[in-house]
Length: 425
Image (tube, rainbow, N blue to C red):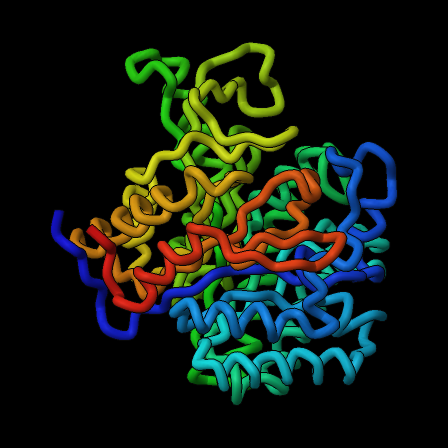
């Protein structure tokens, strides 16, 4: 099998998020959520996480550079930067600045996400993303970050996976605030898209040459019985809500809720991206089930599937990554695979998973998708939200009790790809 080469300048990296690696983010809504018994399935807490805030970030990113990576996607923690509404913390800005400088010294391009699931307590206390005030507050934060970091950061992701957040936190009950209200979920999704658009413009006012995009999680949803009309219909609605509504907002400037809810204009969202980030983990097969009222009467039945505790990341299906990249091609913007990985605590599946999914990216490029980079999730084992420490995604094993590090076999497999800009035969 031939070795497949990627375009010059392609970004090869890994991804992390602030709450999952920094440690002791005590001023956000997730820290509060973790303290309640039953919210985290393995009964753990984020605690020190991977101790990035106290200096282990530099150590782990130095190892990433040694493994051939030339970029890293990470997030800043809103609750550190703005611990009270309208009040900024200079020390937190300085800590991130030192980190970005270190990355530049290592030859790692910083790709910075402004919002990755966690809200400051003051924002959560006023209703979170159901409150339209957060749209302007987020834009103000984005402009402040561009002013303070613009000489070091040129690629910005505004919002990470808005539909995942809404599904779990507002329409669902498993993430904070856990309201379990569809109308609250639709309101939150609209505000997240408006916040993205406001941040997009705010950054460009400060940093005109910046590249600013949004990150979507887009699983491949297919009918379990392709010729069954009800399976096809419920698959259509699930895909519409989880994938298509966001794309329609970017293309047409309208927010399109499902079923009987009226169209809502969102003109500022139209065209508000210089690139789109794709997070892809797998495929879901959807079967009609009259009891699945919360999921538009569609139940996921894929087998085998990647799950741990109460979270199902779907069926490993590299072809779905190619499919979704080609779907995003219609937006006419450059693309990045901002997350792709597998929950594999033994590191048995991950080496082959990396190779096959990187091949899937190459197929998309051959078919006309303008893909500029690939970021594996994750650099290090970290606190995996409601699964706690029971789900391991990292190339580097981390013991949360001792903070010991150990590169896994998959780290060297990915390193060969990064160093050669090719997929190994």
